[in-house]
Figure 1: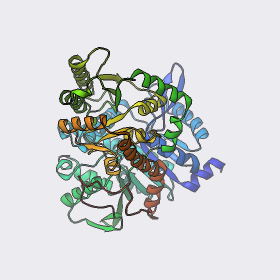
Figure 2: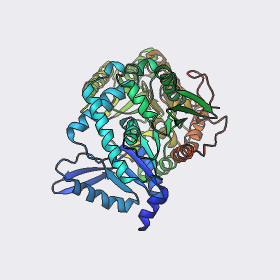
Figure 3: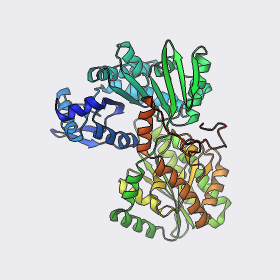
Figure 4: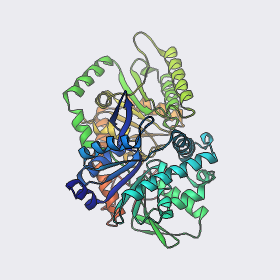
Length: 504
């Protein structure tokens, strides 16, 4: 057994996610691998790199590549990274039913309270079940009894069920990165009982917020009233058919130290200087979102227009830079959303532009991490107003790089991060255009002292409850050791507007 295999067997950590931390694609006759981005990769990569282990996921578009070519390419990366990368091969037809279909045309809108956008198609669910079966097959092949399996997100909610069908004996945990809906919404799903039972086949479940866990337990009470639900300390447990599933709340964080270090780089500071010079006479408001109907971009734009209407003193004083990163462009409904955003921006600029002042600058593209940090640092206010979000890490990134404790965070009440950051942020209802307009005016006129007071609170929370805190806390709780929590921990206390229970 070589050193790398020894690390893997000692740690026994297996991560299963929809995607691998690298994306495979073919260029001419060569197989290329590019790193994946996102919070999950940031969180899990150092854990597996240090301890060894296995990451199982879809490798990307492998059309024209044989299974042997895929394995060979991933093996080379595995040797470099110190943990195994295992591909789950999916045909294009299956990927469309599983990913574009059930995951993103059914579960995604439903879990974000947008049931009117859902497509309840039996073929989608069958594709989802088959994809989860294939993930389970690879997991069964690559694990031993003593291993610990950590499954991530809504794409793989049936994996534990498929493993039990195969009689695979593993310790299993699942973390849901997106919200879990209330009972009256979840009950609209035709496969509601199946999914709840499949989630309870995991030994441990983690949610982003208390509200998500409360919604999940409420669905269990409505659909399975005979299941035994109890609470011990900060954890809930559900017993069915002699199987006990423990349930906890673990708000995900970011690599705060990494963002702070990036903010101090000379290249980033130079970009920041250029941006500030470009908007020298204006206060820069910043929106950063994937192109997604859950992010509330049209509502935010309408609120910005309303602020310019109601508060004429803001005209020619503030500019909104809205960065929209293309995403899931093949999924139905995303192209019309982009057209709507462009139409609203054109309307606002046509109505209010004067001299050299353009009220809204729209950028529809990806930017480098360095450029993003420079934008964060240049912005006087971040407008983070999703209709609903599991957590939303953009607002935490914004706070992490504000090392001078300046800037204002306007945050949706329905972002999971609001339960942590309510003391320093200006909370708004993204459905309330008038309320958001007042929030924009309040941010534009806030004193430096008040900005500093609020940002210190925000940064303290973001730095203290970073990605490493999240990983260690989840693994500790899932293994039964529990988490150390203080009664006054700002990471868990629910903000009073929307929740009536304390963490402990």
